[in-house]
Each structure stands twice: as C-alpha cells, then as structure tokens.
Picture 1 (cartoon, rainbow, N blue to C red):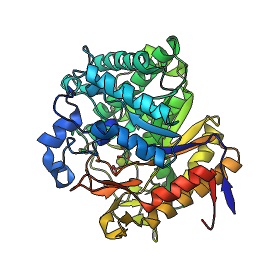
Picture 2: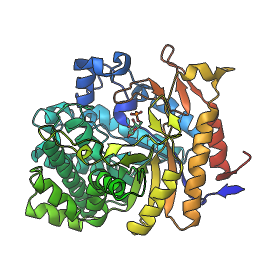
Picture 3: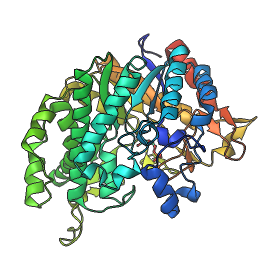
Picture 4: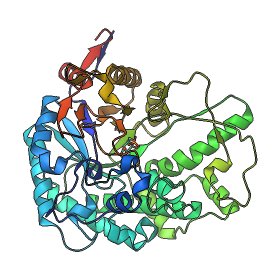
Length: 463
Ligand code: BGP
C-alpha cells in the first residue's frame, strides 16, 4: 500500500521560542512568566531545569537551520518571543531581537523552508503578567500592538502567521489546574482569560487584514477528541459536557464566530460567567481565519461521574464527567497519555463535516519518551517507536484526506529535543537528540525516516 501526499504538502516540525532559544548575556531579552516561574518555582520543573538551559537555538540558529535542511523540511514553525522582541511587553523594541529574527527568517527562506510564525506560545512578558496578563483587558491592546510590530517588521519574509498556540492552555493550566504560572485556581478567572485571548486573536487578525500584508493568518488549537465509555445516556452526556467546555467553547468562537449557547446557560447557572461586552461578540462574529493548525497528542475518554462534586469546592468542567481509563488502552507511559492514531482521522472528519472543511494542517503530533539514551546504538537513537507512531498517524491522516479532508501538511513535535513547560528535558520528542552534557545534537533514526518520507512525498507500508 502506498501513501502519497500532494506535491506541495507541508512537511516539517514545530517548536516555540521559550522552549528552544535560551538566553545569553547581552541579548537584552525581557523576562517572561517561564523565565520567572522556572527560577522562582523551580521545584515544579523536572530536575529544576530553567529556561536558560534550552536547546540553544538563539546561539546555534544557523547550524540548526542546516540541520532542518538536512531533514529536507519545506516548512518549520516557531514562535516569536514577545519578551525578547519587546522586553517590557509594550514600548521599546529590542534591536538584537529584530536582528535575530530577521536572520532566522532569511536563513529559513534561503534554505527553501517556509517559516510558520506563531505570535504567542504560552509566554506572557513578566511586566504584563504583573498587571494581570490576559485577565486584564489592557493586555489585549498590548498584544494587538505587538502583533502589528511583528507584521510590520517581518511580513515580507513570512507567508503563514498564527496568533496563538493552544489558547485554551494558558487559561486552563494557568488559572484552573495549577500547572502553569500564575498558578491561580479559579474557573471564572480562567474563563475571563480565555475570553480575552479570543479577543486578542480577533484583534490581531483584524490588524493583519487592515494592513498591507500578504500571506495567511490562522491559529493553532489542540482539539482533543472526546470518546464516551459507552452509549449509555449518562456517558454520552459526560462526553458532551467535556467537549462543550474544552473544545466547543473555543472552536466555535474561532471557527463559527459565536460561543455555544449551552455554555452561557451553564456558566450563568453556576455564577461563572466572565465579563463579556456587547462589542466583543460582534468582533468574534466578524473574525475568520485562513488556516487552522491542529495539535494532536491524545484522545479524551470520559464516563458519567461516580460521585457528586463538592458543592463548596472549586467549580470546574470535571464536575460533569470523570476521566475513563479504557481497559487495554495503549499508553505512552513516559507522558502518561494514551496513544490513539485514529483520533487524528476523527478530528479531520470533524473539521470537514462540522467546520466547513477549512484548510488545516497538523501543527503538532509527537511522542515524548523518557530515557531515550537507552535506545542509543552506534551513536544514534534507534527510535523505532517514533517511526511507528508517525506512520500510524500519517496513515489515518491519509485516509481522511482520501475522503476529502483539506489537510495541507504535517509538522512533528519537535525538531531538536526541547525544554518543556513542566517536564523540562524529561521526555524527548525531537528528530535530533540533544545531549545535555555535551550539547551535541545528533539525528535519530526517525529523522532519517522522515527525511525519506519528505523526499518521496509519502511512503509505502513496508517502509
Ligand atoms: C503541546 C505544546 C508544546 C509541547 C507539547 C508537548 O501542547 O504546544 O509546547 O510542549 O505539547 O507536551 P509536553 O512538553 O508537555 O510533553
């Protein structure tokens, strides 16, 4: 069986500024919440590794671009670090950052690698977090101004822009589930943050459409497909609620221009409605995107709740469902998440059937493995599990495309093993291994496999 993809299919990988750049003395980067949290809440990060110790993309950018070219990438996503470009979040632009990003974009274009540039990957400048981050409406304006500066500076070099990566996460992880700074636990505040992020997205799209810029603009979302334990009405209801809170709340605002009605009813009933102004809904309604990125790692399996939530506890979507551990599920034990390639097919079909078959691409997909050094043989990580993972997901994607899904590309997470939000360097995802002791970056077996796929624009089942 042959799996062929279109000749202009986007092949590449994704990373983010904070997870890859690192800092060096004199780079004039301002502090962001990750720089701050990884120092001041160091115990929350695997082995206490801070943002200073990432994969050194800032220093080794040219060599890293050569490494991408060695994999035959035709596209690559990273983000601009807001606090590198504008150290205080508003005001003065940092010339070193302009120089760095200019060289990066030129370097990518010269190598025939299309830059996919994301403006926000979880990394609020600390100065703006001090006034409340996205909880404060003023920060929407700061973000709009930052986005405009990026478009003005780099629009001739970038054809694909993205406003946010996984907009749900800063709200959910930062304001409800105690995973990201500022470690607030309060649903209503999380909902406020999400609403403001959606408005910031709309403002950036608006400023982009008004300017003299070519190119396309979109957003990157993690759409976790929800599966009920059974067809019992209570399980179906649980799945509906998980989907409503975690997927439809955001998807429908971005892709349909309105929040789901049911959400408002529930939030009002539980006194959890954020402040939403009349003009906000009009702005959401008039905003459209050109290209959707989907990050896919795992399914969400749910069942009806087994016990009542504590009525005096913190309101959360988990009041309406329990997670379900399906017997025999296939796990990535390093990351503690299920591997379910068919979920990618289901997402593709959903985009096709429910969201107007908009142009989209897989903007992240990958497998993080702890202790990859044990798979080194002859100086190379023999990551056959990653090749199998890639292949299985690409086969599902291919099937959906055969059935008419408008998928334009596939980006793996990630290019070189990178620092992660809580797990630092615990789980490795890269096509290149990063040796933390020597700083050496060596191609894994999966890198070679992916390169051949790119060169052939597909693969056969035996390969
Ligand atoms: C995505 C994020 C990435 C990356 C990835 C892997 O949700 O967009 O930034 O970190 O997940 O997850 P983790 O690093 O938590 O293992």
